[in-house]
Image (cartoon, rainbow, N blue to C red; front, side, top):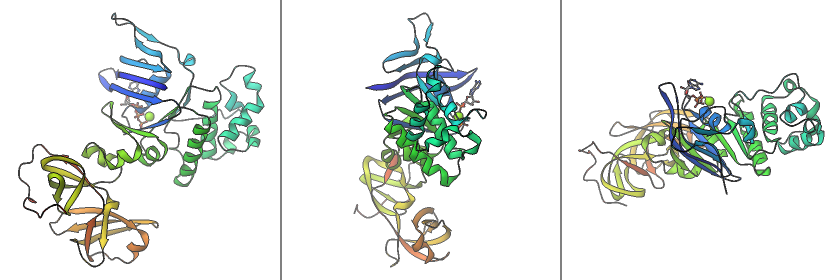
Length: 365
Ligand SMILES: Nc1ncnc2c1ncn2[C@@H]1O[C@H](COP(=O)(O)OP(=O)(O)OP(=O)(O)O)[C@@H](O)[C@H]1O
Ligand SMILES: [Mg+2]
C-alpha cells in the first residue's frame, strides 16, 4: 500500500520557487531518505506534508486520503489541519521540553489518559533502545544521541501513519551519529513505521534509506536504491553530489569508453561520441608492478582504515583514488605507479564537445 503520495507539488515563498512539481510515493513500512543541499527545500517539503505550510499546486495524500489538494477548478484547495494528519514529526531542532522528564516528553502529544500511561512511555523507550529508567530523568541529563532517540519516541507515541525526520542527527558527533542512526532505523523498522528522512549528509541517506531521492531545483532528480544512486547516477552533477567522483573526458563506442585511464567497460551502453566518464575513487587500483596506466602520487591523506590519494596521470589530469590504509603506508609522494580501474564505469554524453584527444585508442578489452 502507498503510505504517502505526492504529485506535482509546488511551493514558492513570494517570488522564490522552492519546490517545483515534485513527485514522490512511499510504500507502507519503508524509509525514504531525501538528500539535498542546504536551502534546497527539504524542511519546506516536510512542513507541507505536516500541514504547517500550504501547497501552491499539486497534491499530498496519506494512505490514499487527500491532505492538501485542489478542490475543483476554482482555485480553492483542500487543507487538512496538521493535528488531523497523524504524522510524527522530528523537527530539525528536535528540542525536548527541558522542564519535563523524558517520560512526560514522550507522552506529551497524547490525550489526558495517554499522558499518564507510564507503561507506554517505557515501551517506547525500549523500542528506541534506551533503558526504561530514563523515563524519570530530565532531558539535559541525557547525551545528544539519547535525546534524539527520545525525540523519535515522542514522534512515535501517537502511533502515527507516517514519521518525518528533519536532519535528526546533525547535532551529534561522528562517533555517536553512526550508532544513533542504526538505533533509529531499527526502531522505525520494529514499529513498522513509514518514514521520510531529509538530510544533507550523504552517508546518512545512503545508510538509512530503503530508497534515496536527490532534491535539486525543487524536484527529485533521481529516486533509487542507495547502491543504484551511488553506482548509476543519472548525471555528472549527481555523481559529484552523492559521493566523490572522478570525471574524465572520454569517447564512448557503445559498450566501452576510451579515456585517460585506458579503455573501460561501461555499466550501460551509451550512444557513440564524446562523454564524461565517471569513476569512483575506490575503483582505481594501484599496480605495484607498474602495469596499467602510468601515474605519479601527488598527495596522500591517511585516515586510518583507508586513505585518499591524488594521482597525476601522464597527460597531466589529476584523479582521486581511495585505497586501504595499510597499502598507503608503503607509498610516498612522488612515487611512480601503475593504475587500473576495477569494474564498469558510467558515461554521460556530452553534447557540445566535438573533438576528443583519445580517438584512435585500442579496441575494447
Ligand atoms: N516561511 C518562509 N518564508 C520565506 N522563505 C522561506 C520560508 N521557509 C523557507 N523559506 C526559504 O525557502 C528555501 C528552502 O528552505 P528550507 O528550510 O526548506 O531548506 P532546507 O533544504 O531545509 O535547508 P537546510 O538544509 O539548511 O535546513 C530557503 O531559501 C528559505 O530561505
Ligand atoms: Mg532544513
